[in-house]
Image (cartoon, rainbow, N blue to C red):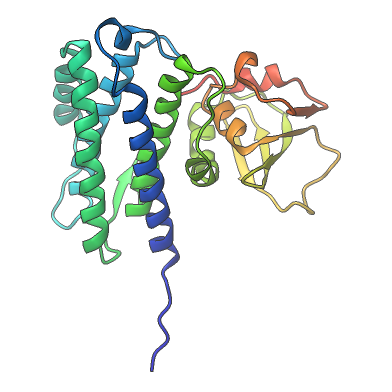
Length: 268
């Protein structure tokens, strides 16, 4: 009798889908009862709440195109396919942006769920310079969805934080975002210790790029400038969402200025 083993990627995919469903339900609960001018209130950034939902709605459509592209005989959508989606969503009135985004969210989660049931591990797609499997694609959407849901929720409740299930996955995928959006400060080296989702990272800066690598707790030099904070706050720092008004108590920056790190991470 052969012993059945669980593919680690399958476990990650299940966790990512569960976290995405949770984030979808959270967003629906936050905006579901909004009417009229309420959806035109500003979110955390310069976009209105409706504009954030429009971005998530158009993103849901684009992710469905990417999902189809990763199966055999699929083709990755180009700008000629994506731009009309953005244009159509931008043209919607605010209340429809919200309503239609929630519907598009449901459709994408259902499509992901169906794809997970039939994927034999062959799903692959090159996105932004790296090959993704299905778990990776779902985590990309989770990152986008959780952070933008926070943008909306925090405009109504300044104490809200990212959900733990999303943080536990997103924190391990920050390296690509750091390399993409981080503003280099040559020579900088920082040890980052997170709590909640306990991790140790080494943040290094060259003239060309910022680099974030997972580190061994014992091997990383403790004489380096060290940032200690909840993993939830570190995710928001890298995504440009850890201003002084939304930083939790207990953040420790030893040998460095947190404002200097904020300058490195303006957000995507």
